[in-house]
Amino acid sequence: MFFFLLPAVFFGWSLGANDAANIFGTAVSNRIIKYRTATIISAVFIVIGALLGGAKGLETINSVSTSNLILASISVLSAAITMTLMTYLGVPVSSSQAIVGSIVAVGLLEGNVNWGIISKLILAWIGTPLGGMFFGFLSYKLLSIPFNKIKSIYLREKIILISTLIIGAYGSYSLGANNVANITGVFVKYIGIQPAALLGGISIALGVLTYSYKVMMTVGTQIIELDYFSAAIAVLGESITVWIYALLGIPVSTSQAIVGAVIGAGFAKGSKLVNKKVILKIVSAWVNTPISAGIITFLIYLLLKGIFKIDI
Amino acid sequence: MSLFFGKKEQTVIELFFEHLNSIENTIIKMIELIQSMENNEYEKVKELAEIVRKAETKADEVRRKAEMEMYTGAFLPNFRGDLLGIIESLDKIANKAEAVADEIELQNLRIPAELFENFESLAKKSLETFQALKDAAKEMFEDFESASQKITDTEKFEYEADEIERETIRKIFSLDISLAEKIQLKKLVHRIADISDTSEDVSDRIQIILYKRKV
Image (cartoon, rainbow over all chains, first blue to last red; front, side):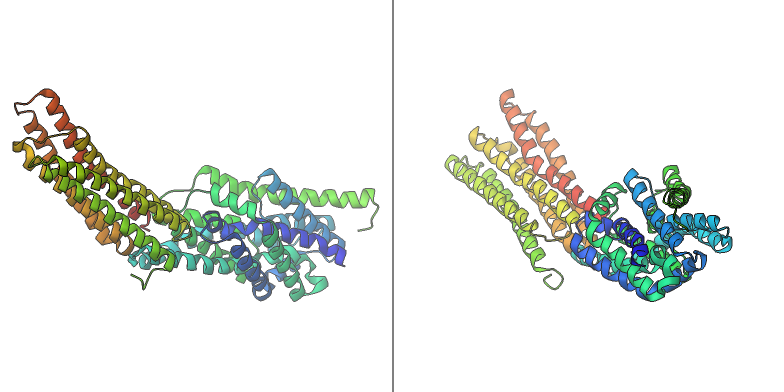
């Protein structure tokens, strides 16, 4: 059993290394908070999120996944390989979309795909950047009113620092609650919901703690320069979106939520940040990620069956 | 203020204020130097020029201390950068005052009696412009709106200084003195007016800091 769960640890690690940047990237790269502080807060709240809020998403993924342990393990492995490969190539990628691609591939191999739930998941992908945009816009509009009333620079800075920490913790909670399903959802049948939440949460936390620095610095410096207030608001918009999807039990991409939230906050501020390139990037991730993960699943399946003669 | 500010920030702000006072002191000493020219007190001019230089050196020292303190982690990084920029450009004002003293003392300049009042009022207006800037810089920490008002005052005083500058130059060229003297005096006028011009430049920087923080 342990052997079959290893791809999940790898997948979780990869997700943590990538997605912590969507929460603390701007704060760390702008040196508002220290990298170590950010990763510890993030790791703790991801595990809490997975344990307290992950059940619904885990059930969703469980309901569309196979009852074959080897195939479940292959699907997670393929998703993990897709994530790593596409991150290496610098192509935008999402764990939620990778795992759905793998699950559909496995379903096709078994001749049984639950298209009802799968189409719901795919619809949520489109809803993610839109949700991010909406909550980014709304949060900015609502919170800028009291914030503008503060006339002292120092007080503003203190509030931004504390908000960044609180929003970061909330964002990490949402990330853990939402994305843990991608990691261990397919194993719920074998190990149960709480152990799946714990294993998934810890795997993601491990990635955050050990390998998130590079992506954080890239995210923080490559995306458009945001003022500290807008950056905190964007993370809040992202967190609310991802949290709502966690409540609904639908794993979504934090990367796409933050892109939407940055656009929403920017729009509230009066700047138009959305362009063809951004939309293309998101749409291409919707298409590329599940297809790549699906193809990798097929290849691993054929490899194990055809060459290693393993009976799956 | 201590109610709201942390210890590191408190130290930086105190040094920042001390820096502003040192610059103000440099300009005040420069005005005393110009006033001493009325009675052609050459020894006094020399002595006061030295005092102006010392005041400028003091401002430099305070600036360096403030910069060092800032990098112990006071304020968030982007405001730290902004503040550093302000301190650097403020320091140029003290340099301008020192340049006026040098110009007068090294070239042994004399101001014709009919121009004296103009020079004195130009120097005083420059001080007034700087003082408005000083208030804006102080208010920047506590109250954005009040700082904006002081910035408007700085602009107003700078405009008035410009008027005096033009009038003085016009008067210089109407006098019956050599062209060399006229050019020397014109340069001195520009140097004094530079204090208010630079003060206004710094107030623009403060305005940008305030704009940047508007959400």
